[in-house]
Amino acid sequence: MLAFEPNWLQAIAAFIPLTYGIHAMQMALFYSSADLLGRDILVLGLSALATLLLAPLPCGRDWQVKGLPKISNPAIIVPV
Image 1 (cartoon, rainbow, N blue to C red):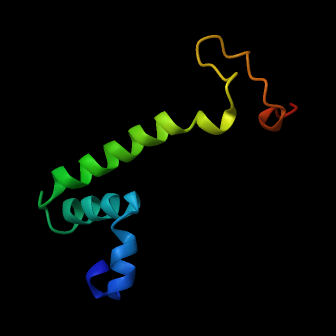
Image 2: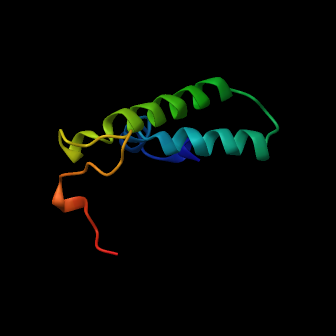
């Protein structure tokens, strides 16, 4: 449990979304409780949304979703 970790590690873990996923699973599986489940789901959902919105940024300007063939960044083209 995170409660037994040092304070500096608890402060870092507050910014890691995996912490909230683990907490939600622990509450559901071991304690049959919905305590702070809304917070856990909200943090996981917001982090997933932020990931989806920020993921295209390193790909450059020419990246697009609709047509898919227009990727002009040679660093992400993998030969098959």
